[in-house]
Amino acid sequence: MMSALTLAVIAERLGAAFNGAPLQFSGVAIDSRQVCPGDLFVALPGDRVDGHDFIDAAIAQGAIAVLVERPVKASVPCLLVSSCLKALSEIGRASRDFSSSVVVAITGSCGKTTVKNLCRSIFSEAGPTVATAGNYNNEIGVPLTLARLQDETRYAIVEMGATRRGDIAHLCALARPSITTVLNAMEAHLEGFGTVADVADIKAEIYDGLGASGTAILNLDQAWVPLWQGRIARSGAKTLSYSLDDRSADLFVSDLRDHGLQGSAFTLHFSGESRELELALPGRHSVANALAAAALATASGLELDQIVAGLTKAQAEPGRLQSESLGGDKTLIDDSYNANPGSVRAAISLLAATPGSSLLILGEMLELGAESAEHHAQMGELARLQGVTHFVGVGEAVRPAVEAFGSGAQWYGSREALKPQLGELLDANDTILVKGSRGAAMESVLSALRDLASEVSPC
Image (cartoon, rainbow, N blue to C red; front, side):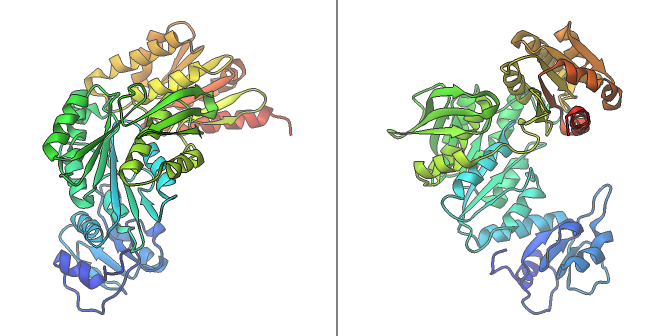
């Protein structure tokens, strides 16, 4: 937390009564289990859990003050506000106001968290860096990220998500980034957005507030370039472009060598300079993510050698195309963190390129609205055309994918129905990739596969 942000300063900004000493708090927490000594605890009310019920637990963990929506008895100072959520936003805004950090913002349908993690690895080469924790990219997560800014923080990497029009504009008003990007627009959250064109338009809110001093990072490999160029032009920002295929882009790659599950090697080009590097993240889409991170870093003034060093050190995150051995020659690929058609296409391409027999276990892709059946069917057809050996669908929404794959496909109504068959599937395949939306909870299938493999592996 910025040293200038005392409890009294926050109280004044929130219009909350506070007559105590200028108490300095070290951070902000919304979960009593994650409170660190010196934190301000924000008692957010929710549909299932109310933070007000955990105030005593937060104080026991070391909270030195609490933010509440109703009067409570507590042994630490309490700030009473009309909305804890709005107050949390104001705390994030206040932290940003006192910070001189370079703030970078990232949105898109796929790859936000990966690009954020790549940026964290790169920017840490140049100075103290704060980045979004996990996928805390909404109206709660972004203020929490901003509240972590310290006096010495040089760079802040902020991931931004949206569920409706105006969400990203609101988050940008809090974070005031000077460098932003839309990675892509794909078939994700269509229930809330409508069409992919709507997704592209809503995501472009991240460019609107940049102004003449800002820089917009543009992915030339997306079909929505004309839309985004128009939004960038209206903002007055400068543009820095990247592409996997277009060598007229400001950043591009050449001599791309795919090493399968081990990642890729390629030459990175920018402003007449080039560097060879190896990326441990698998798949062509990971190279595109690396280009996006490199472009964000370049716009922030980092040197090419710092960018290469950061990219080289980056590792795959749990649940995102992370491979492991199941004993012998069998490999498990954990891509269970989330799923939409774009990320499933990338996973299928990676799986199809692996040697031996392959199995895709796909849980439901959620929030696809009226086009859900069509999108699932496309995934089954793509897996068949690319040469995936076997396909298993889990959940009602995946039936069309199983039908489109045809021979070699099986459907199960639930994860529990599938589990008794996993031993046979494990025996029949060399590489198994497990994927599904967060709500599909496919990590339980991964655990069952690991347990089966440990039972048959020699001690």
